[in-house]
Image (cartoon, rainbow, N blue to C red; front, side):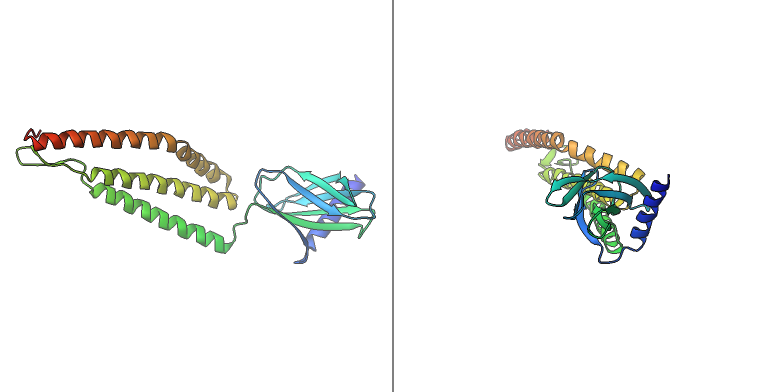
Length: 236
């Protein structure tokens, strides 16, 4: 019990007095293992004492690092679900006896990045509605006379399909960007929702492309047949 309390005290002490010169061991990806390294040539053991997570909670590790030779020690850290900075403290029987460093997982959401994300989300949202509005203005039916006979073939159908396709990818990108924003903000509920929708849009891309190819081909065949009928005076 005393050893645990001593380890916790050392960890809190080292983390609290961490300065701008604290060793940075780089960054890794969320939910991926991160290898912690410590070099101490005259140590026979190196022990990780505590780790402070981005949400400020502290976990007692109290685990020896694995010697890989040449005075280098490693530890494979697996719990990287949180995005942000992880502060690590430890002890050894060599070097400076105690050590501390940090590493980051993902990219932390600072004020500048938050403003950039919100700005891009607003722009994409505005562009999406503008695209939908433009697509709604494009005529789908062929131009007919007062008697209901087709006068002109409407080739703008392709434009309408193109605009709705663009709107699809804009909406997908909007959900993807929102997922990235809420993920870096570490807001779990919204992160899972936006990621689910984004992955759904991604999985539907191939079926969508197949559907578009078939639709465009059918329109092209119908327009071609209709053009022949109009040239023969056999309008519908």
